[in-house]
Amino acid sequence: MKILGIETSCDETAIAILDIEENEDGMSVKILANEILSQIELHRPYGGVFPNLAKREHEKNLEPILHKAMIAAGFLEATERDGASPSDSPAGEYAYSKKAAAIGAIAVTQGPGLEPCLWTGITFAKKLAEKWNVPLIPANHMEGHIVAALLKKGRGENEFVFAAPEYPSLALLISGGHTEIVLMREFGKYEIVGKTRDDAVGECFDKSARLLGLPYPGGPEISKLAAEARKENLKLDIELPRPMLDADNLDFSFSGLKTAVLYATKDRKLSPDDIKKFAREIEEAITDVLIGKMEKAIEKYSAESLVAGGGVIANTFIRSALQKLADSYDIPLYLPHTSHATDNALMIALAAYFKRKNIHEKDFGAEGNLRIG
Ligand code: KG4
Ligand code: ZN
Image 1 (cartoon, rainbow, N blue to C red):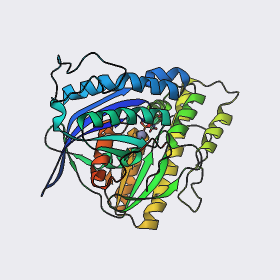
Image 2 (image 1 turned 60 degrees about the vertical axis):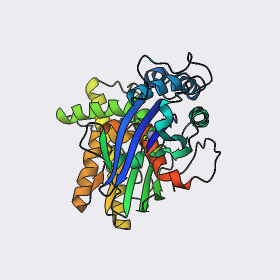
Image 3 (image 1 turned 135 degrees about the horizontal axis):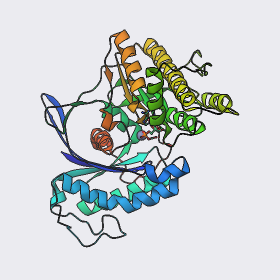
Image 4 (image 1 turned 180 degrees about the vertical axis):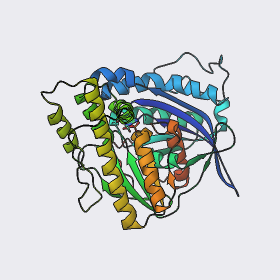
């Protein structure tokens, strides 16, 4: 089955086309197209994602990205327009009538995310589904991050194999808007067993980075400087807090860490080495908390496998700390291919594929606070 996914929940406009095949050997996922347009440069001056700007960019970019994806998948020649000029009615002019016949369903992110952005993707997807006369499947963005982690590299260049994890499985979802530990006792059944009470991990990285005078998004910046600090043996002379690490639950709180960075850096002129030292301490404090909570969760639920997803999982220090944790319990850890860690549409198409048989409601809208489980 060929399925086209659309993702517009935050500041990436993405469209992917997957060819999914199931047989006795399992489930193979061929990535026919995986187009992502990041708006990071546009939002950088604002120090974060500016929702109305993001919405406008999604509106502008969805149609050209669809065009690119159709070419990448081989459904359209690069010179072919299949329709008139780009119009302000998405999917109106670009009918791709004959070529699109191969696509069996369209998937779109319903939530969670920024509502104006989600609506842009949903409106576009609805028109396209109507035009092509194919089912439209809503997908949960966070579930997308989980299933993306379960794709293993296959034989061919764009070929992957999907395999369900060993149960019970614990997923750590860490992104700019989310910090959750999700328990899965069986495929497709989710229960949030721990979450942040204030800032998300990515938000903590971004806000702390800003206090250090680093550009948005701060996660990759901190990660780069922290690695340099470790290499150069630079260490901060104070210890930042590890919030809620010792609390007897699986919840997180990161706003206190950011506040500690605020006070520790106030009235202090930071040298480049000081910034590296702070970056290292921030990354290590965050990692200690994540690992400590995951360890508690593994003990509590006797987990047989770990899954991790979300933009922050691009962080190599956190990835290797999670790997060490999994190894110490002798259980597998499923991580997304680094290029599938940040927001993309292939994870949306994949999450929707599993839901295709349980779509009872024909109409749906954006749900900014959509939960998993
Ligand atoms: O999942 P994502 O792409 O978008 C959301 O749904 O939020 O995650 C974006 C977040 C940002 O906060 C960014 O700073 C963080 O992921 N991030 C990182 C790294 N790469 C991206 N945080 C720490 N280390 C990284 N290498
Ligand atoms: Zn995300």
